[in-house]
Image 1 (cartoon, rainbow, N blue to C red):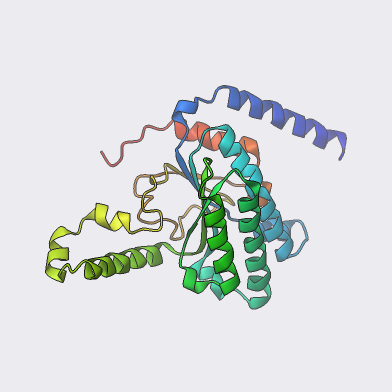
Image 2: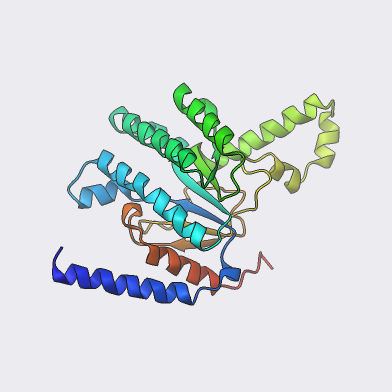
Length: 257
């Protein structure tokens, strides 16, 4: 590392401490959703392989959760694998699934996070389904950040699964379709989402410069604030995170009013 890079790093750290010092923890979002985009483009820019980009993105996760812990965030949803990602070539998808499996194991073994899967389990390999089940069971007692790992997740699929669950629940209770039609409301549907009893995201962060949700938590983000960051996910820094929190704190949330 040359002198210029060292100086730049020092200035960034000083700036980050300054931003953090002015951060009002009372205005920090309770639930943050993260669309971790840009692993492949980061790897390409570095002249490296796609798999290396996914590994670098995976390594960023625990660091990011540490920042969330320091700033009193309660729930984090990490979009690790979408339903659309299953269309990727097998030579990329196979290693990516292995990396994600490792991420879940690492989060569970860390001991600080309560791991919860959001997504359609049936889309995933049997081994990963078992990893997710074990992670949820082994961390159920943890009094730390709830980490939703969105794997095999699609926003439309979640709503379809919620409606299916609602119908099955009504049938099990002997409720007629007519009675269900009379009683169904947004709260009932919300209870059947993957994130059922959790608060909706206050803030959604997307890295890599893309400015769209791509189907991320379509129901829950109706009143969320969005922060689009230019940097690729593996290069996401604490100062970028703090800027997102500062930007969120400066907004006046109207919830459609």
